[in-house]
Length: 171
Image 1 (tube, rainbow, N blue to C red):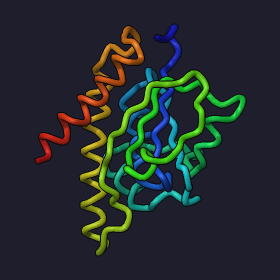
Image 2: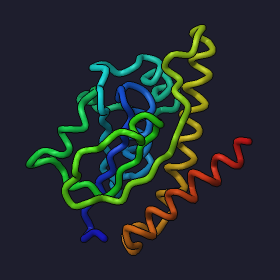
Image 3: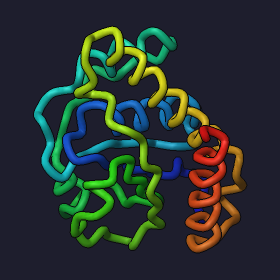
Image 4: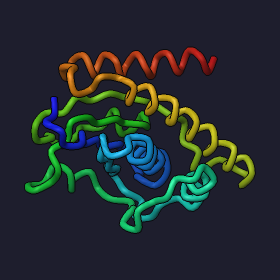
């Protein structure tokens, strides 16, 4: 699918403040240059959740200084990176009418419960840790695929299987 260039992944969630930021960070960290990940939201909150940053730091994942909550419209605009894969990580973003993505990337839904509004703070930290582990498991499984040789339909089917298998293990 690629010619030695990194594969571009976009992780979407409504607010782009927590789960999508963690997903973007995991893809960039674990992808080791094979993946270039971004995140965005349909209704971005405008700020990154501090517990998301704390969770990533706890796991030794450095965030680039330019990490920010942003609109998915940036990735449908002229001059935006051509996307190979898009993952929605919240149900509301998965159900919304998405922009028309240039290049028609493969898409999949990896629903993860929203940790951002869990109270009290210690429970929120635990919820973020759970979301991190769930996303990490999916990202690792996805990166283990021979992405460069699979068709978009094969990748989409594999991404769905990864999510289903991860959900079954959580039960």
